[in-house]
Length: 434
Image (cartoon, rainbow, N blue to C red; front, side, top):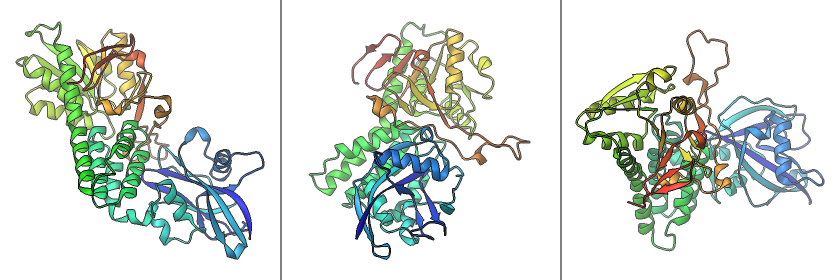
């Protein structure tokens, strides 16, 4: 049998893989479902071939995706065609499940869960090809966990630390049952499925790498359980450290206004700790943070603690900032250059604060702090479903719904984790682990 070098590229978004139905016009494997695929031209690298095929077949540019994984080459015999396909597999993420433009080679497309590949009439070896990218598993084994994976990927109200804890708990259940490769696949599917939260991918992958795999299943399960608990405790410690820094130089009887947006366990802990000893002299203002408006829930939790809380519409940034001492926000990842990613609306709030001379504090768990430029590349701005954002009278118009944005380091006064207080502008680091 002759061999032919080809690439297969899986596009992944929000827990689903893009599959294409090969049209009657192609010479081989017509009527079968496949990823983006094609031959490697002379002098072309497999990765470049994958990117070229993506641009030609579905009209998506290289700048729109992040390549997350390249699997080992595998050989797939195809007796009907008399060929052995030598496949270089790749997986890349998109910000969301967007419509695609098909070329003549394909008649239809679908976004499907990885475990559904085995039930479809695919090109030879497609489930095995995807399994290599996920750590060497049969994708069908993920079926019992689909509901929990989707719940994490579709959660638009919980912060990154909560999703980290839930992901670690799920990984622990698989690892505790002896499914090491399944736990690795879960880490990748969740981390890759929320590319706007680079801290989530980092926490899950780092936990898998550090797990005591040489021990027994009980030890591994206990490790993931503790890691899940630590992911919930770390933002509280970071919040207490931020509150301690705020107390310096502020008279105990002085009234203090704090502004924030969205929802964050670390911010909640910082404000609560700061207010605890100040006898009602703290007020917090929160932007509503649409969609879905999680700032409203954050303000309500402050009110339930006895802290004066007000909700402002997203467009009322300057009224929100009037008389405010600090702006404080959480983060879904802190980059190696000191910039941070957070809910859309964070950057204009930080810009407005700088124009008024108001310091901007970012509070997050240490594990979300990316260390290298390569880790920074984990970030990809997510797009929420268009249906989450449909203004009145917008029928027939395109609805653009970005979920996250980057706040540059020059707009940030301090980054606080449970380990330290860092000043991006000066490079100063204060404090040690608590």
